[in-house]
Length: 334
Image (cartoon, rainbow, N blue to C red; front, side, top):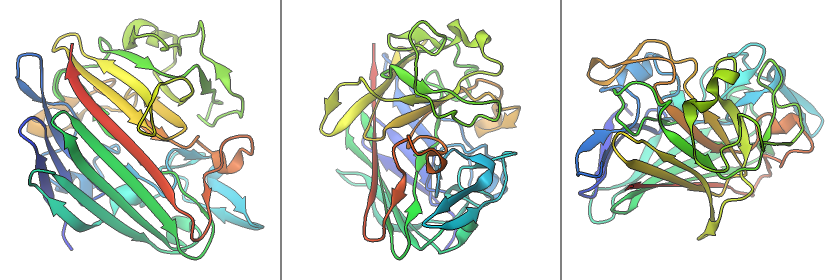
């Protein structure tokens, strides 16, 4: 099995993906005048992803997204430990997470109903995690202006934490257009999970009202980012978005220069809002150089370090149970 590029298109949106990491590499969407731009950071070929040059551009991360404190947890009386790739923590599944493996393509249609399904069999003990886990990720274009991702995972023989996240870096003005500080965002969350100096949640659920984290109403991302040391990298508690077809409205992002709008809907309890704080001169598509705040990530997820935090919603899935996580990205213009 080799890493290849695949394309889904419906005449309005065109998305390119690779089975390496079940990754979105390119996404063309129109602006108010019908001009297309590629609104995600990434590389033109699969090789840079395989060479480890990507700071999680566009991929699916797992088995457990985000940070696990000190790279360890106990489950059913057994202590498990993981590679410390984000000292002192383990991040996004460890050294070789789901973003750095080849997924099998089990279904690919680029017809009237474009979709592609990737499958990965994670082995017992892989990156330290317990039990065999069968994972699928289906990307589809359900309407002319939307992209859907449906993730599922089934543990075969042991209880295991599962927390998959889609790690696309968005810049609605175009991947090569500079920083996203002029984008505005609304996050449908009245609380977040504050973190310690190592970016591990303290366990409390904090109201965002009257802080620099308050995006309950639409605000410019750059308006108060200077109050933070490096930028936003926080898990929001999605508790006040309207519901539609079993999904909650999580966020709305707007770019004033092109009038492009992205609405994200999800069934996950949390969303990491990340402003590309550690992107530092990565050479991407067409030779574009991506710097700090070149894009933003909207990673819907279970709460970070939930496996070690009893008051957070559990991320443990039992054998025979099923993990499900759906994201719907809707594109429009103002």
